[in-house]
Amino acid sequence: MSNILSAGTPAPDFTLHVTPDQMLSLKELRGRPVILAFYPADWSPVCGDQMALYNEILPEFHRFNAELMGISVDGVWCHAAFSRDHKLHFPLLADFEPKGAVSKLYGAFRDGEGVSERALFVVDKNGTISWSYVSPIAVNPGADGILEALESLPK
Amino acid sequence: MATLKVPVGPADHSQGLADAPVTLVEYGDYECSHCGHAYSIVKSLQKRLGKQLRFVFRNFPLREIHPNAEAAAETAEFAATHGKFWDMHDLIFENQNSLSEQMLGDLAHRLTLDRQALRNALKSGTFAERVQGDFSSGVRSGVNGTPTFFINSQRHDSDFELETLLRAIQKMIHSYK
Image (cartoon, rainbow over all chains, first blue to last red; front, side):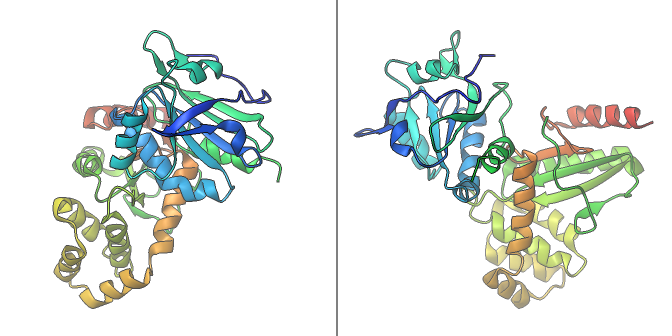
C-alpha cells in the first residue's frame, strides 16, 4: 500500500478536467471542506458501488457544506459515461494526462497497475489535509471515516 | 475495522434469541439483486445454525439507482406495525424482479393488510423517517454497499457466500465459548 499524504499536510493544488470542456482547481474550493475520493477505475464493480454509495450519502456530506470529488485515471469521456449511467450528482476528475500525476502528488498511485489507490482525503476550508485513509484495494471504504473527519473539523 | 455504531435494540426487526451467541445484522436493499442472493443464503444459515444465530435486518435503500427500494422498505415497515414484517420481507425478496407500488399493494393484500392504508402511508411518508434512521446508522457504521453484514458488530469484509459466512460465524461462536 502507498504512503499517502497525512493529516496536517497542505493539500497540493491541482487543476484537472471535470468535464470535456471544463477544468477545476482545488484552490477554487477554498473556504469549504473538500472530500477527495481517489479510486482505481470507472466501471469495475466495486468502484461502482463506492461511487454509487457516496452518491446516496451526498446529503450527509452537504450538511457539513463539504464538496465531494471522485478522482481516477480514467479520461473525461469515460467519466461522463460512467457518471451518466450511475446518475452521479458530484464531479469526477480525470487524472489522465500526465497519467496519475495528481494521484502521485498525494501518494495515492499504484505503480505496477497504473491506477489510483482507493484513498480518501478530507481537506479543511483552509486547504490543509485534516484526515486521510487508504483502503485495501479490494475493500470498498464506507463513509464512516469521512463523516467522523468532517465532524471533528473546527466549526 | 468498521463496527456497528447503533447496537441492536428493541426497535430492530430480529429473528432468533436475543442471547444467541451470534447476531448477524444485514443492511439491505429490497431491489438489490445481490441482496436477493443473500436472502436465500441467510435462510440457509438460519436452518444450519438454529438457536445459535439471531438475524437482524436494517434498511439501506439505494434510492438513486433503485427506484422502488424506498417504497419496498417502507412497505416492510408498514407490515411491521401489523406484526408482519418478516412475512412481507420474505414476499418482497421472493418477488424482487417485479417490484412496483402496484405489486407492493398486491403483497399487502395477500397478507390481509389494507391496500389503501399502505398507499396512504407511502404517499405521506409515514415510515420514511424510520427507513432513514436505518440508513444513517448504516452510513455511520461503515456500510460499503449492499448487502453489508455485521457479525457481532464487526463488519464482514469477505464475500457473502454460504460457506464464507458460515465459517466467519462459527469462528465467532468458538471465541464466545
